[in-house]
Length: 154
Image 1 (cartoon, rainbow, N blue to C red):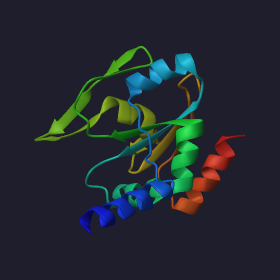
Image 2 (image 1 turned 135 degrees about the horizontal axis):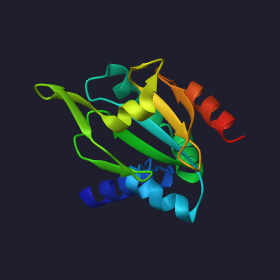
Image 3 (image 1 turned 180 degrees about the vertical axis):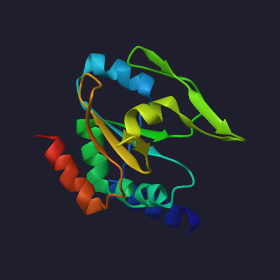
């Protein structure tokens, strides 16, 4: 009986077309751009940002959005408080501590600063040459994000 329930559960999950959002690193996108040119969407967030966590739990769990991001864009899920050095676009970016276990990554500042400040969540869209073509630093619902993706495809 347990095997039957597990089998039904397994086929139920696989038949719904469930797929996960593919997230790349900055280093991977540098390499992937050599193979296939695409725009890159960078989701800049922190662990403590409630709106960031809500976007992760809703917007980035929507199957239409996942399919569109996976097929047409490169997606980078970037924690602005990442402490490792990141090599991207022929430059090495570092974590900048500002106190006891507090700080921000140089790359988050480079990509997420709008009007001389950074706020979370921030979406940064890069063209195929890794140049910023769009920045937005507010929570986007599933509906709003779908509209953004449609505009970015043009």
